[in-house]
Amino acid sequence: MPKISTKFKETDIGPIPEEWEVVNIGEALEIIDGDRGVNYPNESDFLEGDYCLFLNAKNVCGDSFDFSNCQFISKKKDLQLRKGKMQRGDFVLTTRGTVGNIAFYDKSIPFENMRINSGMVILRNGTDFDSKYLFQLLKSLVIKNQIIELTTGSAQPQLPIRDINFLKLVKPPLREQCRIAEILSSLDDKIELNRKINANLEKLASTLFKKWFVDIGDKLPEGWRMGKVSDLIKIESGFPFNSSMFDESGNYELVTIKNVQDGQFVSECTDSLSVMPEKMPNHCKLKTSDILLSLTGNVGRICIVTGENYLLNQRVAVLVPINERDRAYTYLLFRQKDFQNTLMGISRGTAQQNLSPIETRSLELTIPSDEVLKHFALIANPIFEAMVGNFNQIKNFSVLRDSLLPRLMSGKIRTTT
Image 1 (cartoon, rainbow, N blue to C red):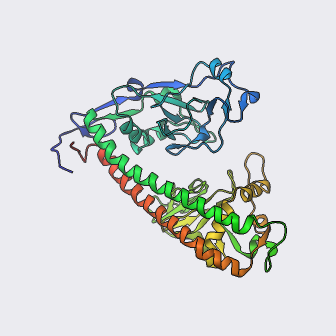
Image 2 (tube, rainbow, N blue to C red):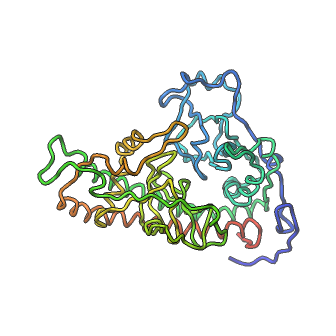
Image 3 (cartoon, rainbow, N blue to C red):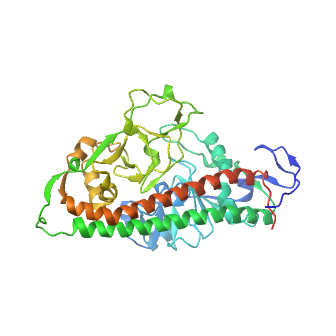
């Protein structure tokens, strides 16, 4: 991209080009809270797939919506509420719990009617910002770091709504905003395409798994037997690292429960180490294609590791097929909805669910014949490997995007149309 000669000026958030501005969110965007009054929905108002989707903070994950556990209210209840109604083009920012998640209500979202619950706010854009540029900015470290400074509370982190007004936005000329958004969005599009490909690949592999191992009738095929999960899979727990070992400049990143999302490995880690503990088991040094299982909170989540130099913390387990040939089988078994429901059913705890690796290993399982497992591996493993390859591409595109984003947002890289 052509270089532009740039003079910089100092601002509250660092140097930016002289012709750019820094504005407060409260000056540039409308901030809309949800309705918590007497008309707030009670348990009887939540219906299965009815008129209006009532968003909770859990429906905003990272920088996108997660509609896996939706709650709906009736049209009558929707009309009784006064605030928190969303429009296409709005953003949602979480302000409680996992603070700082942001999602964009664009035309790709399948729901026509959405409202926000407490623990989040709507950010409504006017004419000063290109929406795609604004989305990139709101989910960038430029904003994330400001949010961290303003967040209060430890047990239940909160971002006070009054403080959101003072978050600083970098405002280049509109034409430059559009060009920055175009560059970053093109990388996001590549990431999203790979995610869609992987979703289709997993759907195909899951269909094959059900046909081969679930829809077999009441009588076991010849050569099959009843056994336990431990007959095919080892479930190895993470290591209890001491915080005194953490080193911000360490080469080894520490994988915790937060890194294990539903089918997605979050590669960004909070803590790192420079030296591996002597007593740490070898399985805790993770590698690409390792399969992780969450043991606490949202138990039973599964994801595939992408990248090297990751160490496995406690509350997460790695699933190790006894025969490497059965790696795809292992992943697909634990991704089955019925199997995940079983894992939740054996979990213990009131404030927080905990899954025992010992009990999981002991779960009863139909053990296919070795010949069947061998033939299934010939079909399913190439699909699994293709998924791993796509996850690698997603990570590479993400690294490129994340390295470009701060330089574009600060004007250190300028763009022309």
